[in-house]
Image 1 (cartoon, helix red, strand yellow):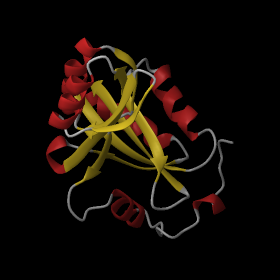
Image 2: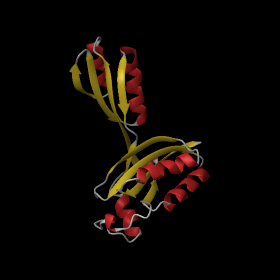
Image 3: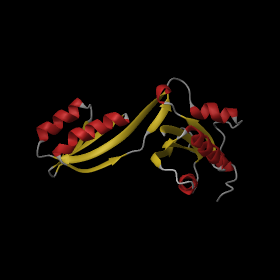
Image 4: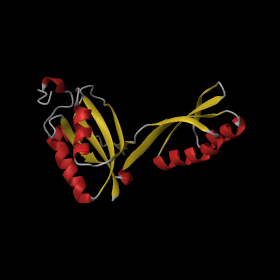
Length: 184
């Protein structure tokens, strides 16, 4: 199995995330990472989904996603032509404060809070960078952490919304909420 990152443009309406997630659940496919957020168009949200699947299964998943009414576009995001990042917030013990500061500096992270015997660190980067930072901080006593799902953008001027919406004949300024939501 190999890891695949999908960018999925969907209508920004209630229930879309649940329908997409249930598609994977019904087929017993595990989602390694899922990040959802608004796009430059308030009527469209973007999902970044990371999956471990075989090639033919990926094609089936994409075909099933396209069948969902609220899905506008899907694109695989290959590592060589995209920028991938994750966000990490981690709270560690301040007992070895000098060592924590040294690690934070070496990983180009940022201390965002320091009080009550803990230091809260913010870091962004590729998955391997985030994992390395966590390994370095583990011996110092991680108290709590939260990590976003992977997000990805194509390099250069390419924009998924411009390419896919115009190919489908949908203006990027078109109000999607004027379309009927057949699944609600």
